[in-house]
Image (cartoon, rainbow, N blue to C red; front, side):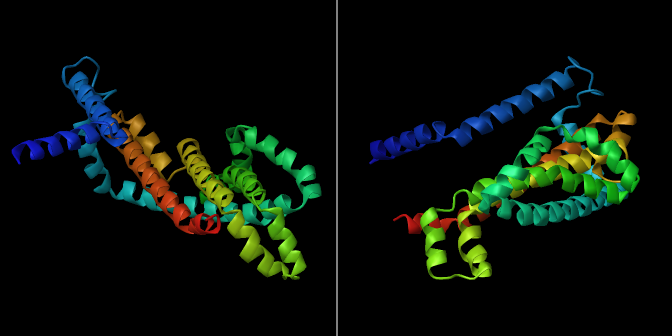
Length: 268
């Protein structure tokens, strides 16, 4: 009996050690421990590289700072509006391009060209058009996300099987039902990929705009803390934003899996 329990324990330990999550966690903890030691021992100046424990304390200080709390609200508003604008326009343009070869051949190449162009070079144009304020950051965020959404939506529509199109024509499906019941469900992988990439691009664009030309938002607070040599608060802001992105990515992944369950059923 004792030997059986020992074997089970050993098997559990082997399985845990072979888990990718355990290895990731081990590497992360070792990195944080090394970082803490380097900063505490004075190998590097803590002003430029504060220890992780100090950064954790700085997170609590940030949420006690009314300016920082207001900055997260402003950035969240800008991100939400820019993403909604980009998503609506991306779907409205991406679906027709995906369905019509002539439109795709005519307009997709310039979209792909702008997709590969660094968006930061367009920031001064948005500042001239919309001024230094919320409007310019929303417009710039929507612009940066739009091309990623269109490209992925077009690719998603390309997943639509020809037999489904023929079936819809044969039964005379109205355009609304054709789009809602056939095109969009078939294009969901591309749509979800486009929304996720668009959200990340919108966030990056909004933060860059706040960092260089704004008097509010998380990017502005990063600039303020950096100018004050508060590296701990700067890294704390980066850590909070990174954690929010990870959580959002996890939720996107769960939602995508749930929305695409019908594919597994359809292919069985």
